[in-house]
Length: 548
Image (cartoon, rainbow, N blue to C red; front, side, top):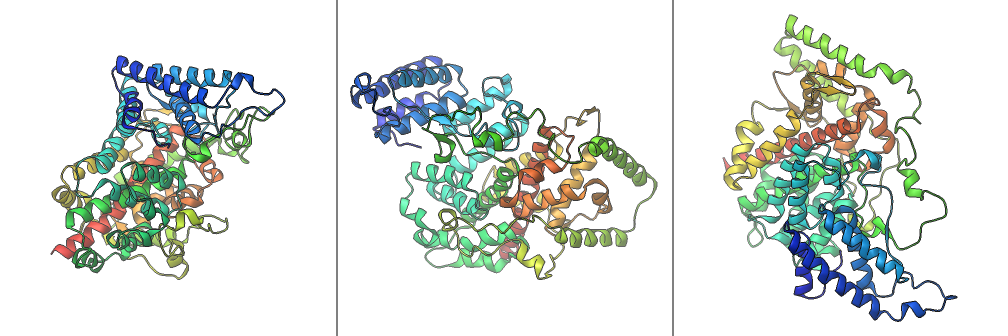
């Protein structure tokens, strides 16, 4: 995002985030005058030689940055008055012969048609209040929030937690927080999140040299690289020795409170990378790849629109086998009913339950994620972390086993929650609310069917993810997973949770073809929160072992 000149100018742009309409109007008036002054300073636009190219994208990059910011506000600001004034101002500038930017692509997601995602201009009062809070805190309403707004109750909890972790009082300084976010998102080559936090890092006064690579950052942050890598790909390998190394280093040591803050940020951004790729989140309008100053081509759609499936009446129409999929919802509901009846009739022995878990865990390692070639991280992101070859797949190819972590020995509810709350007050509570919200969220619907109890399905998805991480619940029958989750769904889950950068639109479309996009986004919330909790459990168990 561009850097505004001078404190007063910055203050005026901040004024657009105010809930007070007169403050916004005053700020907008000032901005209009400032922008028109800059436009006039470019020269006598009206007198430009008609045979010369249009003044186009002016050489004044400061003005370009402002125009892009205005474009973002005209599309994403939750206040209607600001959206309208920014759109009008851009139109006035275009009328003077200055080329203005336009968004690339169509909407916040590559996978979900824009018309199905909540429009900023058409939300209910509760969602409007959540959008306004987010905009006041971050001065943006990002694409992740727009996609999550299918589920406003969850979005409120998510934004409260993220705001607290990044902006409120806490053990770590602000620039460290954003740098840790960059480190975490870079593990999965998630350029969307890296770009957001590079901007935030610089805005809170971060040293731009650190962005040249982890080796340019302070030693203290470099030491976090090892647990970043382990948590992202093989959290079961984290030991109390890793924790001891961070806490005991003489001059660059971490305090326990700082380490808890860092671990929560790492796990939050690893799992948010999963959500970003799993929902096909597009670059923000004001990021380089989110807009262009080139005029639209003659054809009605640009290539990005076509890639986004613009013009398709139904996002599943082009998939083979659509006719056979007609009964998939009813079939799944029937299996849920039968499992419920079996539960009531007979209970498997503890030995049988343990065997079913081990079988499911072994099978989950054999699920092939993607036939695509391995992703080679682009230099601009991979420089933020070392050992780019370290990923999830390496151990399963060598036949390594994931050890079993029994939830009754160390659970979030009985152990992790209180440890986080003790060392980083209120955060345990916020995370707990967010986990519960994702796990318990239900509208009692499945596709077009109403009054359906989906708790069995939600539990199977959550427990399958924890099973992939080796976490076992003694009271759960893992035989249910194979009954409820088919192969295409398992491939999607494993890819999104373990190697999210390999998630494709085809994978998203090939599971649960008859379900609504809002239901698939709900699945992605479950995957994100289950992954975060699994990583956190391993980190917190290692910290507890160090402390005892």
